Length: 69
Image (cartoon, rainbow, N blue to C red; front, side, top):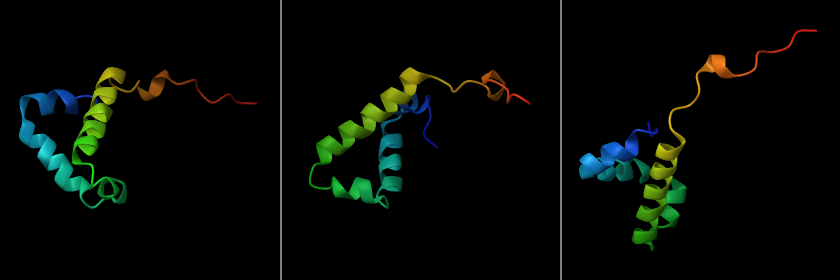
């Protein structure tokens, strides 16, 4: 599963990016970019960096509780 820690993991282990790409080979959206391999990798890295910048999701208790009538 990709999360906010994945980008850092890819920086330390470049083989992880190849592993992620091998899982994406079954995804139609990934396959549509087959003619643009550089663009495809850039989009993936941009997505991982975006996840990293957002950080961990807030805990479930941080949301507003359901109001009762």
